[in-house]
Amino acid sequence: MSDAPLEQIFTELDATRTEREQLYVHLHQNPELSLQEHATATALQDALTAEGIEVARIGATGLVATLVNGEGPTVAMRGDIDALPVKEESGKEYASTATQVDEHTGVEVPVSHACGHDFHAACLVGALIALHRRREHWSGIFVGVFQPAEEIAAGAQDMLDHGLAEAMPTPDVYLGQHVLSSLPGGHVGATAGPVLSSGASLKVTVHGKGSHGSMPELGVDPVVLASSIVMRLQTIVAREIPAGATAVVTVGSLQAGMKSNIIPDSAELLINTRAYDEDVHEHVHAAIERIVRSECDGARSPREPEFEYYDVYPLTNNDEAATKRVRGAFDEFFGDASTDLAPVPASEDFSVIPDALGVPYVYWGVGGFADQANAPGNHNPAFAPDLQPTLDVGTQAIITAASPWLLAQE
Image (cartoon, rainbow, N blue to C red; front, side):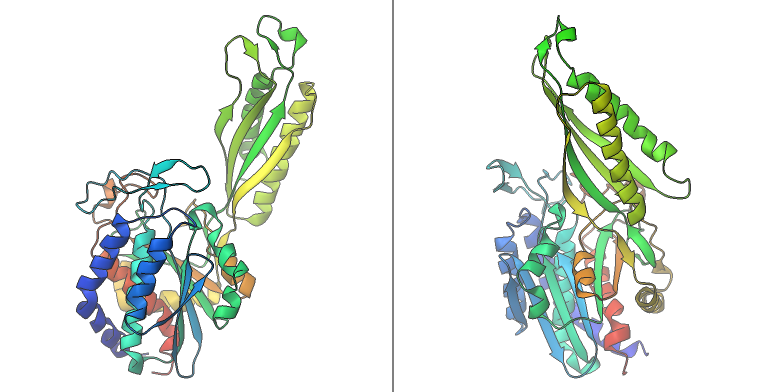
């Protein structure tokens, strides 16, 4: 494969840089919460339809943009579009000052793209426009999937539930990327195998028997019970998970009672779990439930504990053969700026769609900060990657990753 077709396609990035930067800034200044990305979806759709690109709404805020360009493979690329309830503190001149009423809570909250989804969306728009304008240099089908609600692990499934599989041809490969601070600025990183952990949150409610603080013998103290559970949960990773495996169990919240001299009748724990192996993750959840039930039994809890799982994210496990093709293309085009992506202890719902469609996938990272040593992590209020070269590199990465399939006949 010659670099010439890629270079010809990339000339469009020079021609559209101002417009792409303006789109990015608009998205950054107008973030929207998960499943509430109505204006975001409209802005993306308008940018694409102005170029004559076919766009379909999937659900309320999902989009599918399809380029059909003769015979050849089908490549789909995901770009997530939702933002976070985080007040931006990046110091950027285009920083978000937006607020939005959370439809689930009715509370108005600050909103920002503290995870870089504005880059993902703007890069995918740029790639679609470049490929659309330079059709003579590739053949096949390229599909842009603009996915809502990644941050609450609901968007991928929402698109499937609203007919995504019928709205686009089944892809030969499904691609995705994420801007990160763990890679040097302007670099791309791709590795076969697990790259993002599976993740889940669960609410555990344990029950006691209320009493006056001066008469603990008449009650069952759920605060002591919950505290014992917190300590015992730490033994799962330390004593049940093999040394060569990885797992995380975090108790992020313990809530019980309202007054110092009242023993409450229940306590609530919010727990988050991560693992790079689904069997390990299942073991972690089974161990949590076993420990909680055992501690409740030992404390004479009058009722069975309750378990509610939510924000469940699957493992992101890159296909070996497809990743080899993408990494080869990255190495050829980016040279020393193409590197390995070390597994990231974060989770997302990217793999839900390719798993449902039964197709291989590749997910890579893009470094977003020239000053990597002082770069904030994702979800930090200061997370706002450098506008350039991040926008150009992210757009180049999409087209380069697709090139082993779409430029295979060159």
